[in-house]
Amino acid sequence: MRDGQVLTDYEAVTPLRRPEPPEGDEAAPAEGAARALDGASEPGARRRGGSKKVRPAKLHAERWVAGRSHFFTYVGLFLFTTFVFFRPYELFSMPALNEGAQWLALLTILAYIPSQFATEGNLTARPPEVILALLLLVAALLSVPTATNPGEAWDNVVEFSKVVLIFVVAVNVMRTERRLRGLLVLVLAASVMLSFSALNDYWQGRLNFQGERVKGMLGGLFGNPNDLALHLVTMVPLAVALAFARRGSLKKVAYLLCAALFTAGVVASFSRGGFLGLVASAGVMAWKFGRKRRLFVVAVAAVALLIFVAAAPGDYGMRLASMFGGDVTGSATARQALFWRSVVVALRHPLTGVGLGCFYHQGAHDQVTHNAYTQVASEMGLAALVVYFLFMVMPLRRLREIEREALGAKDRATFYYLAVGLQASLVGYMVCSFFASVAHLWYVYYLVAYSVSLRRIYALRFGEEGLRQAEKKEGANAPDAGEAPAAVAGLTL
Image 1 (tube, one colour):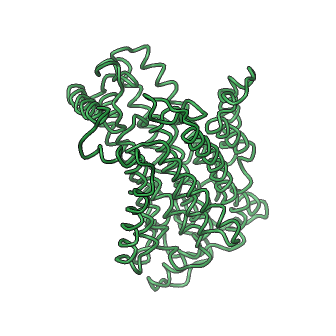
Image 2 (spheres, rainbow, N blue to C red):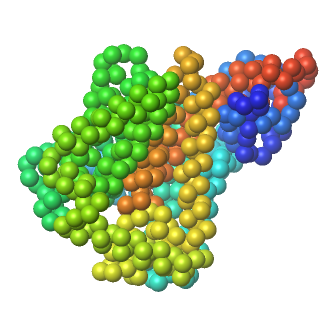
Image 3 (tube, rainbow, N blue to C red):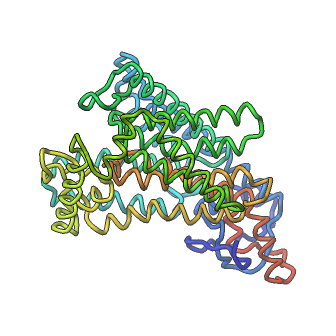
């Protein structure tokens, strides 16, 4: 918190008043929890009311409500995420699994709606990221009438709407550390399987893409080696963060081994964009974790990078060198041509683009942009590009606030490490996505959902203490026992 103030991007919340009859005390926790879920107690939120205190009993009750609502929705989200990242219908030839993800998504949303109304009285909390995701969906809808192929664009909008809806559900449902960690561990487990598969394909010589790149055991999100590398790059910082946050030595070693395995998976993918994303995310972690000895950390990181490149397979070093010239396959030259073509298309269709998923009609040889930023600009318009960029950048600012507040506090160590890890993951995604058409896929939406959930859980757990520190700095007068300030009305998840 800066200058004893908490900053918020959310609308003011009506002050909570002390209920007089006993029945009111029973209803107050649910009411406070509902208001809080709009994000009024974000780290750094500007206080809109006077200096009042929240009774610990009331805050405890609000935490109780927040931690136990949306249980069945979370179960549905967990199972749906299992289908997204493990893709069991590709691993097992069972017809019943083919439509499993669709049915799980539908059941999860059906469970979410009444639970959300019962808890908060609305369809969703309104942090900026939710608003931005919905704006992206609106931009996708607006691209349909002027699309190169309206029917195809509409089909792509329907698919993208599922991503946005599940993102909204995840933001509202991941209300506790246990739930957040559960999804993180689930996705890390899938990443372990994918990394082993990529390494095994490389060792066995089962290569695709002109006999140079691993094919992988799963399609969809991970069928392209560049997309696989992007995913693994975003998982490395999360594994490192969880390793630092855990107390047991075995757990620390297990998470660090996962991070090493994911790094090896990136190498096996032979993805140049994956390498750049890995360097960027590692740089973020080194800079933040080594804040007291940054010069030394930077020097060690540079040496580690040289050793990493030298120890990698010979063909990998040659592929990295092709970024600076001598591209034998011609893929780098083709990517540059596609990039500039997508820029031209975006400038020719600045308002609504050529339709979601329709750029390949404008490109050479029916190819996609291979760049998430120009993908959004060319298919949905320049305004959509701004929204997409803000959607990724907004969580970084708020994660930095948690990082600063939690630094050095033992009881906040988990939040500190996860805040840094998520920043590194988002930066890694932003770099890798410059070389992949992934703007409408699940990767970044899960990362942003983790980030929003982390800061809201943080606000629930430490909001009262933060307010007390702010009051002390401002020299506030003793509070009236009659009501709590507007900002405190939201001190729950």
